[in-house]
Image 1 (cartoon, rainbow, N blue to C red):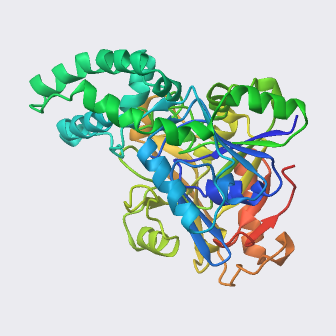
Image 2 (image 1 turned 45 degrees about the horizontal axis):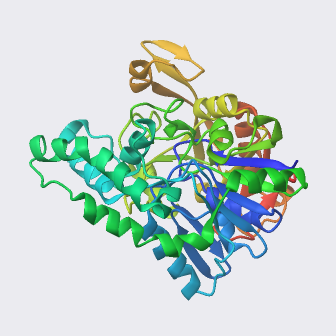
Length: 427
């Protein structure tokens, strides 16, 4: 049962798309198990760059079946826009499967997301405004709309009515907005039914049968560990579980079937949106990392906050995910620094702390404790093996591996599909 989970080990944007795509040619299924179109993956294939938001990265690999699992929230308009864009570029999207139990992002979820965030003002979370949080809230409140509901107009109408009863009260009386008409929403959602039908499947059954038949299944998380609703920097988190446990619930596969858990680590650290970030840089180094690394959100278009590598976070990700391997990305971005700081611990109220504090207040006040590692100036983008890296780059990788608690099995030395050094096979 070769089932692998591949997830972000920081705050997202670590390069999961490249890692998933790299493995895509060797796996039979790639499954998105949580999140929605608030995630973004950039995949470079030859001289072609693809920006994916909702679709699994495996959709670019011929022979691989891409799956949107039950734990994902789906905006149909975004889905069909992405599919259309890929089809226009000659990508075959016909094998896509979508769980009938996945929840739909409705127009009113998007409206609620935007007006709520504006209402919060300085206390805003920094959401993408795409309706993801309100859709997950509806799911938990049991007023959510699932893909399968589009095929029973009576049930769909009842569910939309139930959802809008409270939301229209909130929109009109609290936010001074117009009420949303039930019929208009139902009509719009029903308009997607026929287009979605060829993709809808019992994905839980499909994936478990595939694993029983010794097919290779890769579970792909969106966002990152520190954005997990339970284990991230709450409340500045996403509304689902990108950690490894989310793969089981978000795809309907038992934990005993997972064979490896691969964490994607950027060679430095970034995050998008509000929230604490101990190693964040506000100087020329931060701007250089942003410029050289092309650190702009694929989905949001926002500049990413940049900082040095944080080993405390990496150790935490290893622990909560049970990581068996790391894929280190964007090592090439660090070329040119004489010395590279690495955060090995925090100072909180004058005390050295080497593990992530559980207290939100403590983490907010954490100051990084740095260890300086020698840098390198040589171009590493053509390196095909670990031994071809400069000695100082090798030492940097080994130091990060020792600090993080799991072996680094692959290293990204450039944005291209082939600009990767594989140390240990993931399969």
